[in-house]
Amino acid sequence: MVLTGARTAGARRRPGKARPRPDADKSKPGLVARQAAARLIAAVTESRASLDGLLDPAGGNPAFTGLGDQDRLLVRAILLSALRHLRVIDAAIDALVDTPLPEGAKALRQVLRVAAAQILYLDVPDRAAVDLAVSQADADPRNRRFSGLVNAVLRRLARERDTLLPQLTAVTPRFPDWFENRLAGTYGAAAAEIVARLGEPPAIDLTVKSDAEGWARRLGGIVLPTGSVRLGRPDGPVSGLEGFEEGAWWVQDAAASLPAQLFSRLEGREIVDLCAAPGGKTAQLVLAGARVTACDQSATRLERLRGNLARLGLDVETRLGRAQDLVAPEGFDGVLLDAPCSSTGTVRRHPDIPYTKTPEDIARLAVVQRALLDHAAGLVRPGGELVFSNCSIDPEEGEEMVAGFLADHPGWRIRPVDPARWPGLEGAVTDKGEIRTHPAMLPHADPRLAGLDGFYAVALVRH
Ligand SMILES: C[S@@+](CC[C@H](N)C(=O)[O-])C[C@H]1O[C@@H](n2cnc3c(N)ncnc32)[C@H](O)[C@@H]1O
Image (cartoon, rainbow, N blue to C red; front, side, top):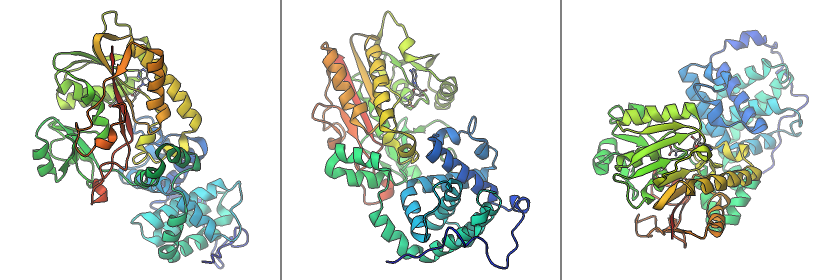
């Protein structure tokens, strides 16, 4: 296919149209939301800001927190689509301009990305997406001279979408090269499917207090081998679903429910959850009858944990502070260390991660995890157990880090998981008996019901 496109120079303004006054455009419905989306994509891709932080209702970016509810939903949808498909979107933009966009025209690229995400992936009328992008360009002195180009490129994108999109999707890598190369190096032949699944939005999994079959029937879901109830992708917030108010269940990816299940016994035991917030695993431990101390270094996140446990009607003692500062001369029967990590296993719901994290971050976090694991081992009573986990898909933060720990602590060993424990997830148990999940696991005929977060978990005991 030959792609000829709009020019970066020349196609500046639509003939016969007076340049709109920037102020007049500010009041155009939907414009402020698109401007916010462009600013936030810039924050992710140019400043490596995390999407979770930017969209945090309490301390997030004012461009987002200042919006009304409807606009927030729209901006979130634009950002998730734009980041899930950023390389295809950029390839489409680049294919439709005759001359490459100027290197410094970053603000222009963000305007085009926001509109292209709507045209290619969202249920927004093409005309609205194009018109708002032109207004957005006109309202920004850096982009005003390119408003004709914006108009021409986006109209053409809308016209040629049905041929262009499949062609570009087939030949364009999904994620940044560093991320895909690491997955290929680790997972070999399975990497292509993992990449494909990581690019799709995940199902919503619930951990239920009891009666998984009953809740699956009531909510229209399926029961997974982990005991979780999987709902596909329900419309609207989960807080509107039956059982939320009464605290019958909580949202937790099926993979995230595995670490707490690795303790051999919880009833009546004293367990410390060292990196506990927002409390999904704490809730499992309490529900199983353990006396749990939940620690976290973040006051706001610990407050969220308290709120979550209160909704569930579960009792927990909380302690604000760094795990490595926790001193407990008498020790605990069990320690859960769900350590801070690169979160690369959660790209399905956090598509910013491949753009905000680097291989250096992974190496740095592995060092942090090792220090936390060394300290956690000292908190375990003789005969007790230590579960280490995180939501990284990278062995440097999992298998390799734990191998280093075991080499330096000859008194410790892995208590292997029985591969038959979760039928359908046999492939998630490594040769050494650790848990390693990734999004190509738990396939399902309906892709909305398939997959798992990438997770690592291991149960460690003293000889
Ligand atoms: C992956 S999240 C934990 C998720 C949690 N276990 C759950 O299941 O809901 C990691 C948590 O560790 C906390 N954290 C990070 N470094 C820490 C440290 N050195 N000491 C204590 N908490 C820490 C973060 O504030 C964050 O809440």
